[in-house]
Image 1 (cartoon, rainbow, N blue to C red):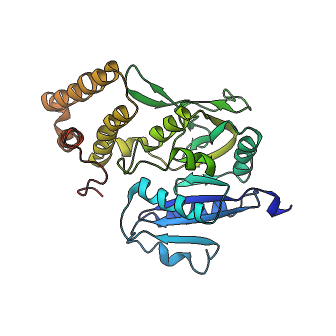
Image 2: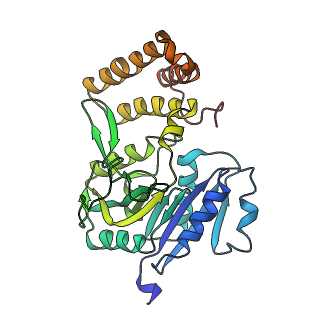
Image 3: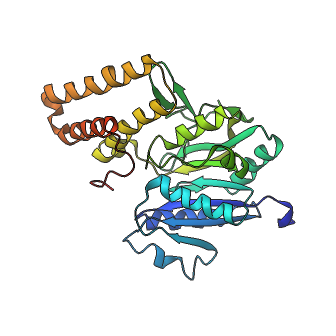
Length: 308
């Protein structure tokens, strides 16, 4: 196959102390059928020896050492800058804790090549530990509640999403392929988020620019995600709480969304965690949400240094 005839795709992985996952993801990418791609790993000042493992076994990987923990947003933006500098045609943001099917990139590129109105394409994403269970088949935003959710979450894949690409409100930053022209038109990820909700806001921005966002169900990857573990950490509670409000602000959400978020969600959860004895162990999570509210209303965004 003539490599030059295929658009150049730069695949961006952000690594922060995730050596095992990152190397397994790279091994998976090395089996891609698509002939014209380059992988760049942005390392956010890892201390687990990740960078040292890239040579000589991974000499085909371009490594950018950020020098600090720039988060998902800052790390990916560095990768985007590199992709633009080498005149890539498409940029794929991919979580470093994923494994991919050999044909998934081919199928994503085909969709974008066939329709210039598509601004982003993403695969069906399954749980790594439960490979037949869907984690994300795209996402939807409930503007009345001011919240977002994954389509198909925890469903057994029985072919319910068909074989043809379909439109969604947003794609998760776990895996999103974009033409460079779209990024040049709408800009990069918003650094105020640092991590969480940045992908949803980006998708809304792209949709408002007149593009559609498509899930390609025949493209498949597997994500090493643990929902239970993530929801217990104060770090996640902080970023999710603060950035949900930032998302509502940027997208000019209505009164209903703000009321539901601030009163029916945040205030209620804080009160329950304080009053009910069985939630007394949630003190750190409660403090994280309170800190998130304080930081949002005082305009403090980006990295929360306590958790990195």
